[in-house]
Length: 110
Length: 117
Image 1 (cartoon, chains in turn cyan, brown):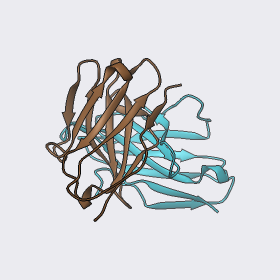
Image 2: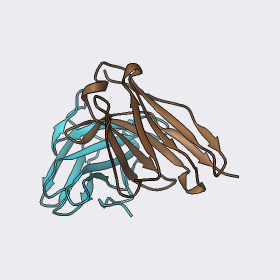
Image 3: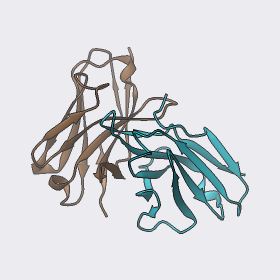
């Protein structure tokens, strides 16, 4: 059971928009920055979003991040087949004094 | 660009020892915290612990304290994750990652560890 909760899967057609949620608590998302990562099995995870909404170097503006209370959201517009991957959120938990992650969401572009 | 290159897949028997590595490409090794993260089959990521290679300060997640050892060799820009006695439940993918603001920015490609009799 991951500390942060994500939907196991989402799907959408090419060109459409999808959002992936990440739910936490006051000890993590509520008072720490959130990062989002894209992971293709067999490769190194890639940082997409850091400090809640800032895009990492080279990440297109189709990817966005936002925060509301103890939840974070990753948005992807103009979906492409190359966006098919696992996406997971991460943040620091002040109660656990460790980083924590979501369970990951598998994005399928139909 | 920073690159973290991990050692290859390992297949071990229960009770055996193991040390996997993570080599950092650029001269950031001594100035950034590095983390080890576990992903068990079909599960999410778990934070194992971190090390600051500059002075080898190490902090473990309570779940992993006493079960693994994190170390670093500054002379070759390499961090290590070590087990003295492997169990079948250690079967997982292990990632190293450099930290920025206490969260990972660059990741290694992962090392698959399989422990089976």
